[in-house]
Length: 374
Image: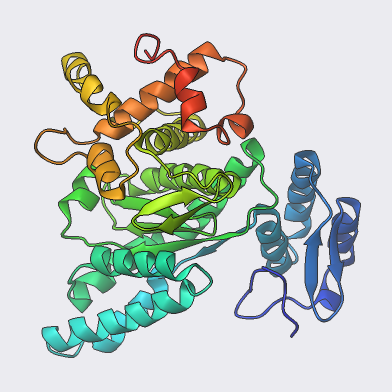
């Protein structure tokens, strides 16, 4: 088959254009999603969310008789391919299950490392390397049998479908037809207290605008937190698309302005992502958005304020996540959420489509923080 430009494989191959149902082909033509014959290729002629919704609703009905084409068109609309990578990890575990632990653990790690490299090969080498290190670190040192049991539980919970549906809802609120990314679902470390207890079995991060990586472990209410995390990372993907960055000398540099990302930028980015995910979930904000008492915030804010222009990635992470010493856990997340909250209070008509593209400085100056952050 021919290659689809950034398309989605269904069952390992691309659907043949000549076999596309005539009704669905007509829908694509009406909405300007053009489908050509072999070699299969699709391109966007559509930039209207109303047209996207029309295509989704009509093609969903037709898709009952042609599910492989519905999945294909849906993927083209969203621009994000969800890859349940944990299923491949299951094959590594099954092959290693009869071997001694040391040998089995080494074999699973080697297989996972090679698999991750192939998945992230389209990224900048430094970003790909970061992704590989993170996946291996989060994987931990599992034994094959408990890992297989956990992955079976995960699969029964339909994580791919949860992320697909969440991203569809996100795209209706924050539409970016030019976004072309992948969402990788990997197993996390079931022995990690941070993953299982603090993060409710779900932990995610974005790699530029091209990938989000989500680590999973079945624990109480993990499916809700998967949906929340997918929405949070979607906001990051869109912001990274609008304000692209690249690693240079231990810092992240904005490509367009050639200025470094600062602590303020990172705090605001997390605040925007959490506000967006909270809106999409219609539930109370997560604990990391309100992790400081009033006295703590009053005490810490002057110390954080003097560091707002810091661009060292290690220092940024220290403030965002806390250091277990002078900086309490989630300090940067909480302050970033409050800054964005202040901005939204002062600009009640603000839309996420505009907010997500604002600089950290613009959001901070429009927030009235700390007096008007609430």
